[in-house]
Image 1 (cartoon, rainbow, N blue to C red):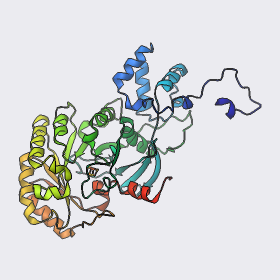
Image 2 (image 1 turned 30 degrees about the vertical axis):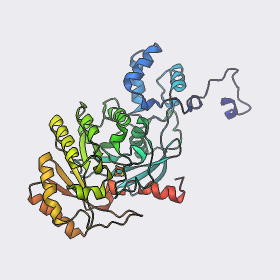
Image 3 (image 1 turned 45 degrees about the vertical axis):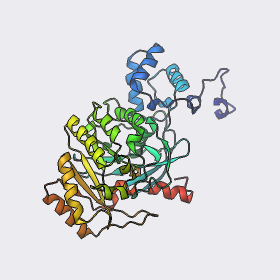
Image 4 (image 1 turned 180 degrees about the horizontal axis):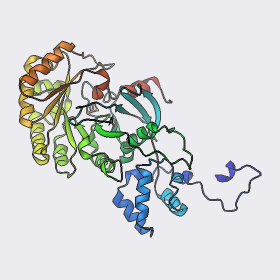
Length: 399
Ligand code: SF4
């Protein structure tokens, strides 16, 4: 609608150039960041576009993180219009941010359909998931809600709604980096201000809302883009996928050539204990999960991480140390111990700090590499989903 924006005294051309931003808001069109690079290459070739245009397009979509077609200033207008007719270009909008610049920060995003998801940005913290995070770690969501119902987690309290599309997973990383670059997330930046391309996030953990391996195909499209040098540039070894234990998908991941890290949300080293915490354990009990993890370790030749939330009087008895140590040794795994953070609506409690340290010491005395994360802000998994839940229940919809 260009003429409505034009002052009466201005010349209004008889065939106005369409406003590109208005062309591609049709929900049935795929978002361009949900389409693989190979598919885009084919499409550009079909349009008889020179091959170097693909590199230019990728540079705008990922390192420059643009939010509008108009920002792609070195692409011909005809190409931008063709792209806008065939793809959408959407980004999550920021609803709320919690936390200070030097501590863990939670972002609550609104998606196109109004659903809310969370991402958590964790500042430099050595040894969190195997490799030193010399800058920042981002924890991203992969689903709206979750069907797995792990008993310590707020994300599953209102059930599962839908899988995130690849661009909605990638979009969390780009939106946080845009936010960091000082841009307003909900406004169209001026065309002449090319976004800053400095990267913030060099560690990615896939342990926000949702079970990542239950959204495997979309996750893989997103991670390939985030890993690629033309995309997010985050090394595969700095991307950790955390699963509640979807054994068949762990095997599929093991067969993928990319060297992503794997973390298992374990929380119980005996079926009697794990059944109380992780409903998935009834479908894939520890014997099945262990075999899938062994397959992964054999194929990848890499250490995996076992996440163990210490919950008072549920899984923190000294008697749990030996089975946990045996499992960790069998899988050549390290163990992350995380004292439980209380979740509104759930009745479990956090053990005393002294008890957590004793559990950790006992595990280490069995020769298991162990990390005890006592900082409350770093309890990504237990904390995840609470901001969204609270916002939805309170009807919070704007920043
Ligand atoms: S811990 Fe993960 S898999 Fe389990 S309910 Fe929460 S989001 Fe779902």
